[in-house]
Image (cartoon, rainbow, N blue to C red; front, side, top):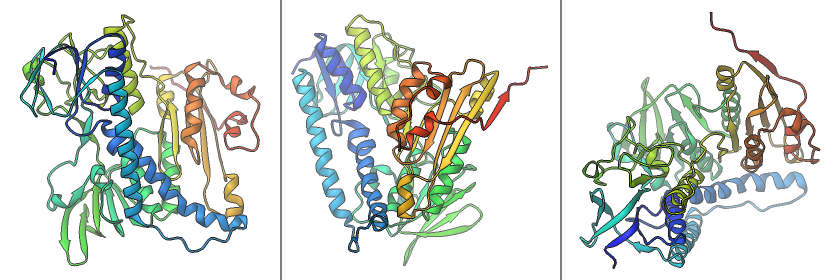
Length: 460
């Protein structure tokens, strides 16, 4: 095996794999090390298996709704073990595809933990071999953070373990209010578990638009998810009939499983960063500039380990830009503004740009358009659910600066809205676009009446 390369990548997740392939395409000699499985968090234990579980959970609604459309469906039964086995088979296929793509790109793959010995030398823990690298890219992602060590902490699982449970829990307490907590609450609820979501803040999805947060919470509670806010899990005790979960205020909830989704931390421990002189920021993430360059000029970092925007497409774009810049002589910076994203809750959310609160702080005038309606499919099904849409417009320029959707296919819609926002589309552009009828998305181009206008007060 070679002991000198142009690029050594630590971490074969989405960002690292993309960077390795593109750099190799430019003629660089590339080696990539992965201590777990090729594909990283997203493919192995994140967005991909999560979305498969989301699909599984939604079938319960489909079976119920079919009756309103004339279908007689026998009483359905669900088998958790079958779902997990099929999910594992698909993840193994994807891992093999990632590996094949790296091999086709002539990237050397090493199944080992890699540690920096100095600014140019990487040690492969599995073999003890050292590799000299002209450039090093750190793409080790993040890991679940389970918070402080409380009594009964050994009973807590993270999203990592949730993908491999032997059986579906009848009762589960999930602590957290972000993407992962909300998504898994919807997954377990859809599959038949009794779900209690506990969050220390005043409402779920902190940082999202207030109207979206309120609407999603109401929809989740309609579905039977118990959402407890302004409380935390203080202790967990194993008793004869399950786990007794003590919340602040001495409220107890019984559960079979307790999952913490209380954030993720940059995966930097034991990498030898201090030895190489790589600086961390106040959050414990690797500090980088706009070109993903660390404090050591030839060492770079992309993805969740930098704690910029912890989304797979962002890591991929950063990895690609790094390779273009360092090996393709293109000098490309990643634009981290106006990144569309989706929360695969039930119903799902799609968002891009500024919230109403952010817009009111940043802009002189803000116009708000919003609507809430019953999805057409729900009419014959008789399902009690409503879709919510909101447009945030710069009142001075008429430019659309934010879009917030809760409802079926919100993630699909926001991807295309993202193009319009990036192209600086105006509300007039939306108004001039012909509607596609009958669809939910047509509401985005037919909202005419302002729900409100807000003018920023001049400082005294």
